[in-house]
Image (cartoon, rainbow, N blue to C red; front, side, top):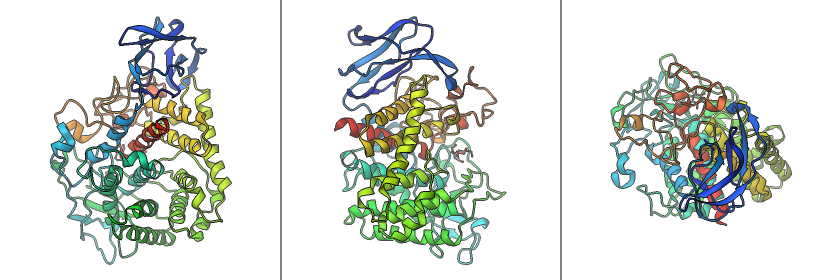
Length: 547
Ligand code: 9MR
């Protein structure tokens, strides 16, 4: 089958399809309403893309700008799935990707007027959480009862983890900081819609309130996670009633918390009349977390022997230190934080839950005109551009025209792809160079169907979305369609035994190592940290093409 973004494109966007070898001649674009050809063109050269194990050629139909619904046709190949060209190609997707967080809210029922067919009872009030032995302190000995309600379930399980909440919550807040007018106009149909703040901030607040409760007020340290001792089975949230614990404070969790609270403080400050005093409270929380991390600079998370939920273990903290320092510097204007970041020593690479340095650069780049004199603006710009140049070069070198290489098919590869797209958009924002935005578009295309599995990896979107994500609610609710708006983790060769080795033929080619089955937690789970760049990138492209 010819592979294409199954949603479609804005009229001015770069538009590419991938044509497998075997057909003959050039390509045609067919208007499905009239079954007539509206454009034809030559294919590029056939080349092999190693992650697909397949020889393909590119069809570039960027010049077609007329709104409509089309397929790509080549003699001897299966037509592409239909796609549209239209003014707001990702508006609904962006709203759904954000609303996925609402569907993963802990401690609340989802009403039919907001959740439609996916309405459900409340789960996990988290008002009776115990301090695990690993988290015991003089003020809060083992077994102390704490209350830490709200927050989002991290993924297909019901745990709440500070480390993946860090990059997730930050990325949403960055979307709002960068594209404020786009999000101000958005209504995603959550209980808070229509109040005085954007829905994105209402949604982020659900998690921020929980995060604040994860800090020990006695010393500023932050617990790594709030979970049961073991994963629940495939049950609805209300049926997951095992005792929950806060587990071990650590350097990574505490610095993630500091970075997010420093960021949230400056976002919330814009709405002081709504959130009176909250910006100050968040900044104070960020500063006391930073202080704890100064005194506890190398406390890795060590999973206790009686706990088997997700570890999110990370033994290297220099990136978290840099990120927290950068956010505190931006929010306070205090040069000591810029010095603490030691910018010349902070390498930039594609972000992920354990690798947060790029977020520091991204925030500094956005705020570069409001920083103190100490800030090295050219270093900030060159850091972003050097990462983006590398990613863009990967796209140019790929037969699929997408910036994914054999090394990119790790756990949550689709999240990695969209984080690359997010970083490309930072370079576009600095330079106005459309080649960065086009490379970002290519990565979104990849996630939405321009890939060797023919899936559009977002539930409810595109012709062939995943139907069996590893998401307890979607598995247990008895509804055929999974909860919409979730990005599946994507091809991953790390743990292909979770379905008994039952992977599709050809999955030794890394970009094919994906299975749309509940059992495949290694390729078909969803997480808040993978959805966040989907929100960011779809909002960024909508805002770009609306201008
Ligand atoms: O996203 C995490 C991935 O980077 C790790 O390789 C993997 C195995 O440790 O864990 C992933 O995180 C999971 C978490 O531990 C528990 N909830 C589901 C997460 C996504 O699979």
